[in-house]
Image (cartoon, rainbow, N blue to C red):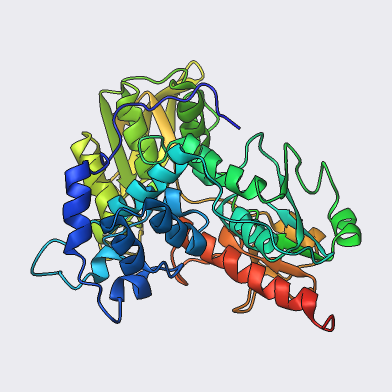
Length: 436
């Protein structure tokens, strides 16, 4: 599998550790008996164990420890907010720098990718068949663990390549597509049938999957960025942030990108769209967010990176109208909002700025129709599940962003991987009930 052509759009956000730094960092680990770093990792990677193995020169053992716990371990080494998770829990803080766990994890998984060996094998065949709808982090994690448990798994992915957001929706200087595709290939090597270019609901019916498989995992993630709902939004030069990032990642260029870009939103996808715009040559890129800086959902390290790339930020402001000229973006009318966090527009505070492009990054829509097709109860497109990822349908489980709700956690790759693992364990228990 490959994405061709793949462009880096400049250097990575963080360079890999030098060999000497790897040794120094690995030997700083205190091997804490209660391992607060492991407890802070959503997938429960035994962090002291993999670091000890790096320190002793056992890179294969380190990689096995990581990937056993986290099927997306190579991706997460690059995109996890480690300062909020494992490194944030490191006992060295706040008196000294935390061990650079994320970069040590990248060191071990980079070695594994170069080595080419397969770490895991499929389990003893159970005779049961499971369909996974969606080939992103949650779907692939569920498929990987189900295959290791001996079940026959088929993944249905609507895009031409597996990996979901990791492949298409994260800028390459944070996460190269090759890393996401390598993780998908490890799942395929376990005998998982990954069928790309097949959209459940159009290419294959939900009823067909329910008839042919013993269990279903819905791991479809989320959809496109919603419209802003303002005049001028259909003009040329207005982009869905995910489409923009995908084009940049696939082609290394975005047609019609001008000198001045406005990004609407305050999350990680907005940051990615903004920094990609700068690296593609825009001279002025500004992010506009409706509330104060403290309410932005982007990770702190992402915001700092965007500032270092020259991205500017404007808070407590919302778009009111896109100004057009001959069918293309020419400006953006904005209005200031109340600083109390309500995002209420302030009458008489509107102003207009010249821009060449507007990128909307205000969240993503949901696949409510797909959930309806499987008879799954949902709340405005958010699948309702219990702690074991079970839906109201006995044979249907849901994992990943399709069951993520704002305020109930973070939409992180590592969280999606853990939800996929949980779904796999639950399905395995369900399929084996009464077979002993």
